[in-house]
Image (cartoon, rainbow, N blue to C red):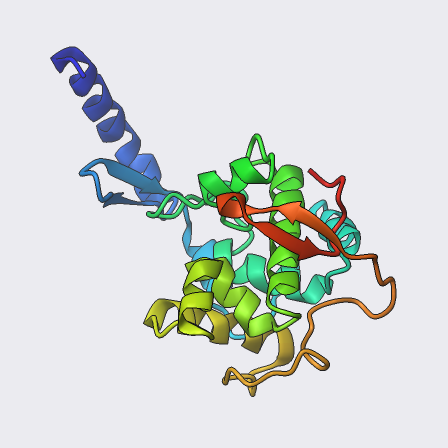
Length: 226
């Protein structure tokens, strides 16, 4: 980057600072030394950290969540719990690790799910619900393992044969499960029969897809939902 370009970037950040501060947005330093703007205001943060499932703040999102949850035969309440913990319903959210949008899709995951614009609620929900369904299939309907895979990656769950011993991941699973099933859901002993995260009925014929790392996965998610 030229000196002029660096100056332009610095000036842009300086000019944005008052507006960012007013919006409750913070700037963090990323692992590569670059500044990352985390666009979360205080309302979105309090919503994300709430101890109960809050109402969907945008009336346009409610039917989108219902439709994409239904397409993947997922309980909409589980999807809402994931969205609340991931982004606080901020469709423009960007984490300091690079996760994007409502369901905080990593760019690599978004690409695998053919999500062109992770900040578009329609695309993000389509990709996020499909990925969550793949994880539930991969871990035989164990919601806590699917959530751990959503947070830390399915490979970490398989490596540790359960929820990985990462404080961030364990807190994440507890938060989502507490929202989904109530505050008493604090452990990792839920059963597939009572905690599948899937809607009853509407069973689909399993089929094989090619998932991350070119692995073959058995799934019952819609084969055409890309």
